[in-house]
Length: 327
Picture 1 (cartoon, rainbow, N blue to C red):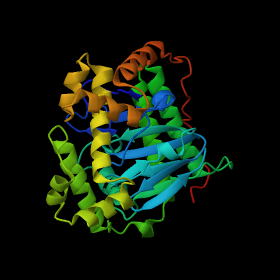
Picture 2 (picture 1 turned 90 degrees about the vertical axis):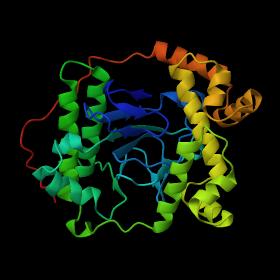
Picture 3 (picture 1 turned 30 degrees about the horizontal axis):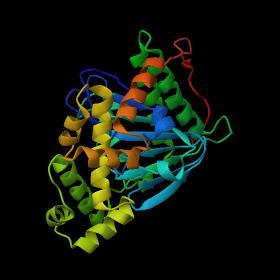
C-alpha cells in the first residue's frame, strides 16, 4: 500500500517512483499490505529518488544492477538514485518489507544549496549503487539508529497528526546525517556503472512508453539496437525475466492500479493496458496475480475499507546532542 504524502504529487503505484511535478512533500511509504492476495509482483525498475527497504519479517532477495543481495531480517538497504533494482518477492513469499521512497530535496531544501553540494550530491553521484545498513544489536551502532529513524518516519506517517510531515523530515535528515558521517569518503569517486545497464534501462523506458500499444519482441529489439539474443541475455541478467515477461508485468501492474482506483469496466482496462482480448487479459492477470481481475478489485475494496491505523503511537524525537562517536 502507498500512503500518499500529498495529493499534488504524482506517484507511480506500480514502479514506486515519485514524479517531481510538485515537490510539496516528496516522500512515499509502501508497505506489504497486498502480500496476502498476490500483489507482490513488483518488477525491476529505477527512479530518480532514493529508496530504503527494511526487512521486517524474514529475509528478502534484491537485485541491484548486476548484483544480488540477501537483505536479512531487521536490516535495511538504501538504493541510490537511478539504479536498476528488483525485489524478489516470488522467491521469498513469507517475507515482509517496508519501503520508503524520498527525493533528497527534503534534506537540502533547494537546488544549489550548500547542503546539496556538500552532503547530498557526493552520495548520489558516488560510486555506490546501494548501501547495506546492518541493524546491529549494539545500541551505539549507527546502522541501528539509521533504521530506527526510518521506522519512526513510518510511524509519523501512519499517525497523520498535526506536524507529522515535520517529524518525517527530521527523521530522514537524521538518517542521512548518520549515513554521510559513516560512509568511507574515499569511495565517493563518481558513477562507473556498466553501459549494458543503460541499454536495459533504455528498453524498459521504451516498454513503459508503448505498453498500451501492440508491442512485440521485435519492436523492443529494434529500439535497443541489440540483437535479440543479446537483449534477452541482458534482461535475464539484470531484470531476471525476458523483455516480454517484463512487458506483461507492467501491463498487469498498471491494470492493478486502474482496478483499485477507478470504476472502469474490466474490458476497458484491458484495452488501456494494450491487451485487446478480454479473455487473454483475464488469463494473463490470473497467471501473474493468482486471482481474477474482478476478485482483485473486490479484495482491494475490502482491504482499504478495513485498514485501521494506530493514531496514538507517535515516536519520540531525542533532541539531546548525541555524544556517541560516529566513527
